[in-house]
Image 1: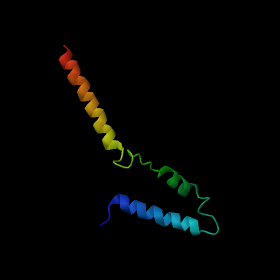
Image 2: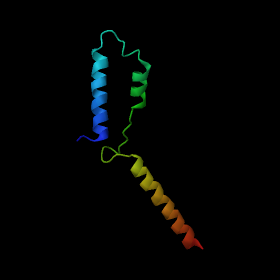
Image 3: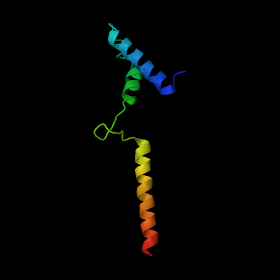
Image 4: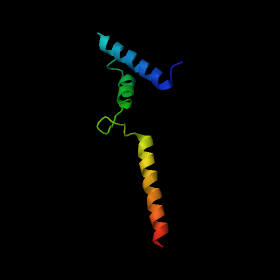
Amino acid sequence: MLSFHKQAKKFDDKLYKLIISDKSRSLLRNKRIMLHFRVQTVEDFTALGCFRFDFPLLCTIISAAVSSVLIMIQFSD
C-alpha cells in the first residue's frame, strides 16, 4: 500500500497532466483546482545538497540551543 504522501503526489501528477492536456482550458478556470496547486507548493531547503533543512531539523536545533542556554544559566549561579 502506498503511503499517503505518495498517493497525494500521484494524484497531483495526474491532475497536472489533465490540466496540461485540457484544450478547453476549463480546468485552468476552476478556482479550487488552482488553489490546490498554490497550497501544495513545497520548498526544499538543503545544505549544499548534503541534508534537508526541514521542520524536524529546525526543532532539533532549537531544542539544543534552549538546552545549552539553560545549562549555562544553571552553571552561572
